[in-house]
Length: 287
Image (cartoon, rainbow, N blue to C red; front, side, top):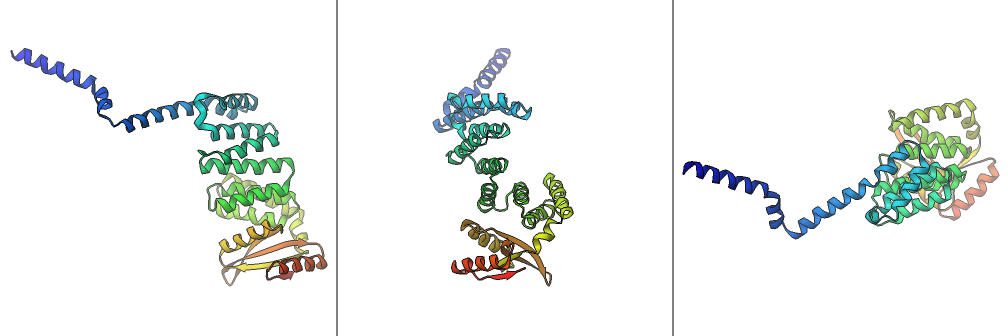
């Protein structure tokens, strides 16, 4: 009898153990079961991105583009429109198909389910497309928008470098140096810091900054707080003025001056000053 009891107990334990998952599903709340199914679907859908991502990392942009575009109509990738659109856009950017790339990056910005990090990357892609195209003002505007919309972001060093590169190509080395110096100060161990150092050296060797300093600029504001300087600069840029910030130390106190310029002649600076005063700004012309 004891043997039979032991066998029966072991059999009962085995049956209960083997059916534990089924029992949990029976007693689990219907909403939890649906959530589990959604998680499984999301994992399965995310796996669809592995192949085009792998092709991109290998530099096979045509194959990555072909695969990513196929996912746009894949029934299991409906919830990944933002991710797929970005993947298509970044490959088009690498293939120098810049107008098409911008279209897909804009789709990311309009997507309902796209994360803010992905939308930031899409804005960077749009700015880069303008930079590669040679539309320097367009690139600068987009990079400025990123700094305004995503302040103190981990990708600030990338945006600073892009702005420095753009301004350098616009023959505005003084403004370029401002962003290049920020990278070396705030992100000294980043890859961009090394690139910023190389570009700063080129500016110093060319003497471009000292040449620019001999021109005229119009000061529109001076602040102890950089946030206030950034806000004023953003307003000026939005109204079409070529504004930039210069940081200095007055009695060991940081000062952030907002300038518009540079201008080649004093007469040009005076005309600009008139426009700024008409717009309601206090100004001062400085050589």
